[in-house]
Image 1 (cartoon, helix red, strand yellow):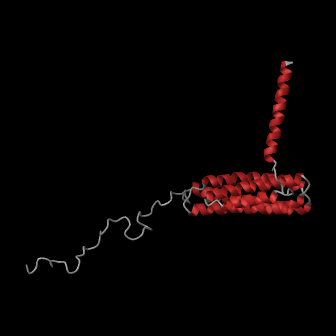
Image 2 (cartoon, helix red, strand yellow):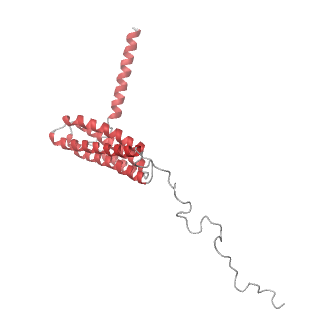
Image 3 (cartoon, one colour):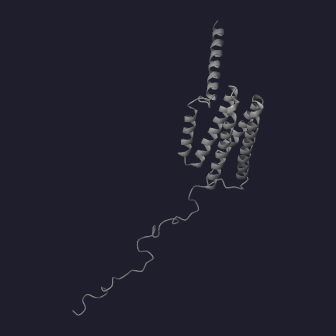
Length: 214
């Protein structure tokens, strides 16, 4: 009886764990929910309030993941009419992530972690999208095929830059301000002792003027 009880407990725990994992993967608010637009507005506000390009790239990658999960959920619910718009937003998110990484690289930032995140994510996205092709009606298939192309293109872009960095063809990045003169961009005279570089001036009319004629 003890062994049987133990096995039963293990089975129950495993079931609960699998349910929790599934619940985490399933989006709480889907496009057919009246609160969905509010959810998307919050995402946009967060993006607009984020100014660091690498943080923005992470947000874009995360939102791409959400759009894909929502696409999968809507297909499971038998509502493929939402697929086109969701996948367009997915594609914008992937492109947005790569654009922000490019901006960070132009600033001299180390973008390797962000590129690796995009590479890993898009590889998984391509696999998920490929599995979905046979689960949608014909009218939804072109959108999925195009999203697969965008996902592959995003991964290839990330891999290309990572390879160039590894080969030394692109700089890894350097701290902001390295290689610049300390006085570059400072107002004139800042950083110099007062009066340095200027001849001393004698006030007019005072040079030896006192004491004469006495």
